[in-house]
Length: 216
View 1: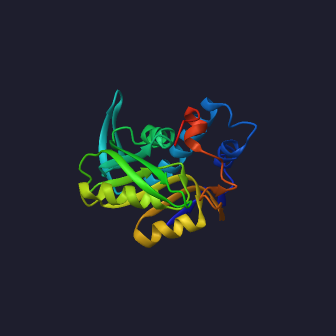
View 2: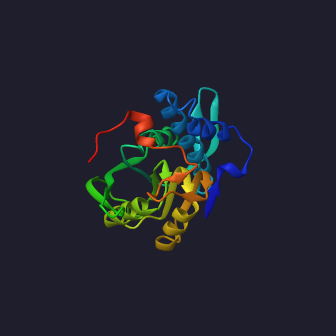
View 3: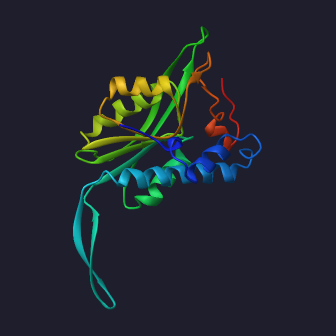
């Protein structure tokens, strides 16, 4: 399933627009908060797919019946760019367990690259709702590599990928390897550059959130 926020006229479109805008995204705090907001909105949408159970809640005036999720949730992200969006999802599912993966593109002289994983911290994901938050889904290679690694820790009940901007080809790549994964997206762009960056995209989400890095 693909859920695209950009297909609906909501306040979320303003947050996506501000993430993209060269006039606004230079404010790192605002950039991080807008990424967090998109995570919060998409987490709320994901919650509509959960199984619920009725519980009684004691108030100062009596008993109220309400429905709460039955799911055990694990939220995961790819360091460092994914942290603001991860926080947004965690703001909604505040009792979730969490997983963190360090992955990056290792570029070769011919212009190609491979995804290298250096660190994984993950609880059991057996029979959980697994949510992977990453701001950019470009080629889909880092998402596929990360999901494969996380699935070494159990078989989840369902898998959800949360991203602010995705490319059409990246979506196809993830669906090819994980056809049952649900994709929750702020906006979908059609193009990738020769170096596999999304166009029009928004730039480097990690640098915009936390500052430029020195890199070989």
